Amino acid sequence: MVRSPSVAGQFYEADPDRLRRQIEASFLHSLGPGELPTRGEKLEGDIVACISPHAGIMYSGACAAHVYSVLSRQKKPDKIVILGTNHTGIGGVSTSFEDWITPLGVARVDREAITRLGIEVNEHAHRFEHSIEVQLPFLKYIWGDFEFVPILVSPVPGAYDDLAERIAGLGDVLVIASSDFTHYGLNYGYLPFTDNPRERLRELDMGAIKKIVELDETGFNEYIARTGATICGAAPITSAIKAAKLLGANSAELLKYTTSGDIVGDYSSAVGYAAIVFRK
Image (cartoon, rainbow, N blue to C red; front, side):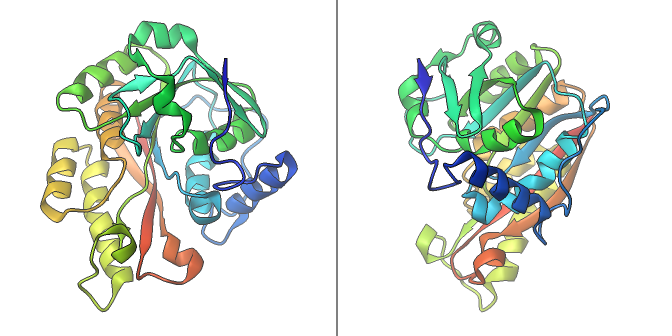
């Protein structure tokens, strides 16, 4: 069984050649890293986890390209785990045994790792969720063939520690947390009580990002509770921070912060995006 793309042609180009051009345009964008990913010899990697946005590539691709630019310089890890935001609310913490079709070829799931993790398999929960899917074209572009473990993470009390420990037990693993940041404005139910929504959005997100780069998942969740910041992937981010520390991370870095408003020029209803890496 295979999973067909859910948002190809919407969040990213469905045609392979047009998708490659779209990805390359993200790297070369004025908000992107400004160069195409590194080819040739790879270095031993020190990045054990990262956070990458999952909006349409036309909006968040330039930000995501910063993550995949630095990943392209290091050797492909033995295991890749993508922690997705569960927008549909179906299930709790779940994985998928199906290989995922992308316009750039099939992304195979790592069934051996999935079996070792012992997480619930729920194909229905993954069928129409886009957060993991949007990461795959970038991974296919920088690494070609790879296997990965897709995990949707819902805000289930007490689940994060157990999930992080299971992931860290896989050994040489890269964790990718797929999340956008604050969804700001009337379209998202977060009222803009300011004449400067651009600065308010950035202020909200930078407060959360500060806790993330401090590797403080408790402070991160307390900040969300206090401010009401509408960060859709708080659950995968929390799990990623915990897993990163178990994998030896002792620092984190914000590579780039952008918003959809930077692309469309309207900040009255906009979404923040952050590219963050955790290093050991």
